[in-house]
Image (cartoon, rainbow, N blue to C red; front, side):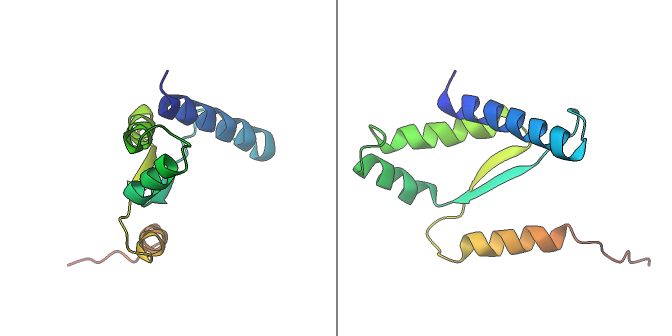
Length: 103
């Protein structure tokens, strides 16, 4: 099993266990996990520090993680230092209750 697949499975299991134990949630609940990251820069940094053999290994990990669960994803925000903050703020405002408009 690819590292990204294994990481997604282990994270899903740990989240479900924690939510069940602490909050009494049942295993059929789904948790959305989004990780905002500059994939290219992080892959280069990992390769440069020799944590991985090549940058493609990191990209393969993210791809496998994303494919393993429809609720888990790495989101590449590129090189803009504020991009992750903007994404998080946008997600937070998107899920706040809204007024329904009727025409």
